[in-house]
Length: 331
Image (cartoon, rainbow, N blue to C red):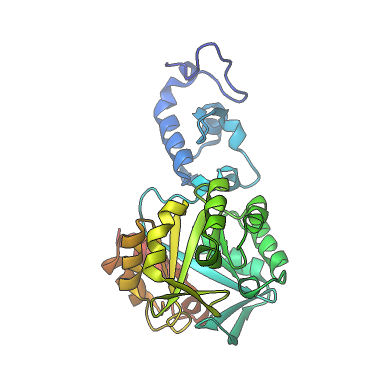
């Protein structure tokens, strides 16, 4: 159908017939691909194309490009599509851990070994976005260990401050908690304790927020840790990894608790095994010390989705832009 219309149906508001813009049909296809994938690279956009090119909404219904003109362009994309990585390029993900409304880092999850790296989490998030972060990893440490709202305002301030996708873990142990943060614009919702203690809750959350639920598998000695790493989850790491796809989980984040915050190098072999057993995109976390670790992960485990790093960035042993460039240069 050269007109780009469904017979008997009027074109949606903001659209026009392709016969009026025949010279830019190829550009329409490129724009549509980016809308579907969630990448939408800004340099390829032209105001005239945004005004005249009809596109198909990623959910399948027709929508004019005018529909996709928000205050921040990235915010218009459906949350699920904003998280896709269709080019399968490993990404570097900066972490912001929140405790009492401040940016901190712990050593092996020990709340007594806490170092404050910033009093303004929203500004910290802006810094990472300016450095080129495609995704920022947030952890509400207070909520991870028990009931607490000390970081709620900080998370909401971060969401208001940046346009890039955000993922949040810590305290999301119920369907209600998942809905609360989904309604406030958090793109990916990370569930850890619930994976061990309430798999039915994880399944329901996945049904309500398809493509947006990740599982945090935090382990020490092959055993899962829960409640802010203060309790044993009672289940084996690989046993749980094998069950995630059936729950509807879209991604796995594996953290070796013994290495987290130590800068002793990531447990690459264990992360690879988690990826193999789960059959899901997997992110490695814990132990990154600098550029060599970034290269090592990419070289030895190219199948992984990404690398989360915090301590190395804040301690100054890894420059984010440099680490990101290394991954891009390695393909």
